[in-house]
Each structure stands twice: as C-alpha cells, then as structure tokens.
View 1 (tube, rainbow, N blue to C red):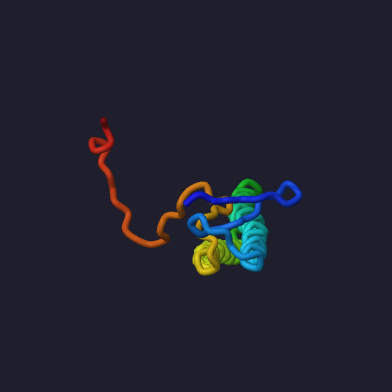
View 2 (cartoon, one colour):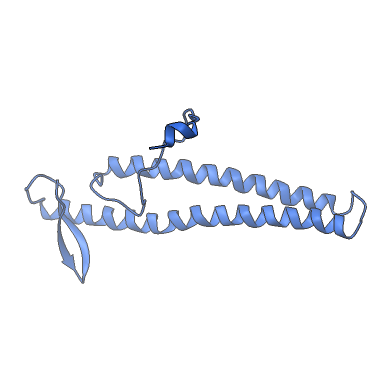
Length: 145
C-alpha cells in the first residue's frame, strides 16, 4: 500500500496508513509522533550497533598488542596478566552488549509493528536474517554456474 505523506517544515509525515482513507486529525498527529520517535530511536540504535563492533575490534587489537609486546620485550609470562585479564573481561562484556543490542533491535522491530508503523523502514539496509538456525555448507561445485 503506498504511503501518503504531507510536509510540515520540509519534513515527511504520515497522512494515512489505511487504504485510501484519511486518518482523523488526532490519529494523524499520533502516527506522526510515533513515526518521529521511531526515527529518533533508529538514529541512535544503528550507530550503537556499529560502535560496539568497533569497540570489540579495538579491544581485540589491544589484547594482541599486550601479548606481542610482552613477547617482544622478553618479559615474564606473568607481566601484565592482571591487565590482560581485565581487557579480556571487558571484551567479553562488549560481546554480550552486542548480543543484547541485536536482541533489542528485534524487539524494536516488534514494537514497530505493534504501533502501526509496519509501512516504514528506519535505516536497515536489508531484512535482518534470523539469529538462529543451521548453517548449510555449500560445495564449490554447487556455486558454479
């Protein structure tokens, strides 16, 4: 169903999510508020997902630097162990945070449907794949065409 929009100060807003019927003014205002709120949430969620991935990468590089630095300087294995354990613990918690953000993303998608905004996309470039299931190994011959 096509989205009908009107502009208010150059911004897009929803006029109706029903098939050709114009929503009453109160409903229109409510949908516009929901739409704007969803856009605000998405504008914070997507960067948070990217930034937690970046933090994991930085911590992994830090872990490598600590281990390689100790080796290069020929220091005892125990040198920096406490700090290394803390970095590894922080990385583990970042991975958990990443998982929680992914779960929150799914919950926001459910909430989006619950509040009548199923006609909109808020920044996902593609449909989110399921977070569970089986991987299938494909042989190279199956890919050739």
